[in-house]
Length: 165
Image (cartoon, rainbow, N blue to C red; front, side, top):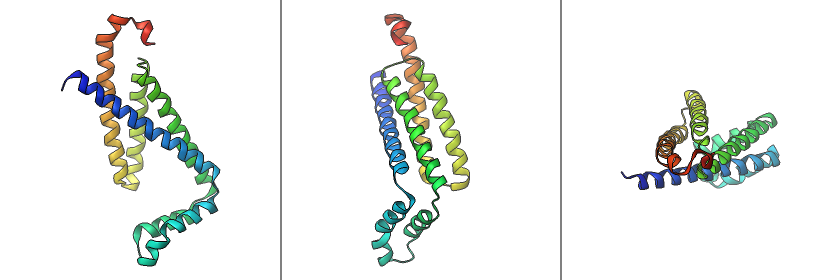
């Protein structure tokens, strides 16, 4: 695969991470602004038709149980987690897209920490979504590493280190 194609994959994967990060920020803000009663009402509205059709629907009942047991402290934790997690990733995505050299190793470290946390969460949730997210993060890490090496080898001698910092 040529460097141009790898760079396109890098840019696309970073943009996807950025879109996901923005979604996390919006979700965190929304979760902080909505009270737990509204969450229960929303989940009831979403699951109502499915439960009329099949009262034993696993996912609908799981969502209802989750909504009814969702505490204010859990709400605050998830809101803060989503907002901070998203904000860090948005910041790093912007820096990566601006080719800030320091952002490449920092992004690798941050994604590595997220992967460790996702592995920890997977150890007791067994969520397929976490596996998919972790695999995507690993691919993004490989692309970041490759882009970083390429920038350091080819761009710095041409433009100077000061232009990249």
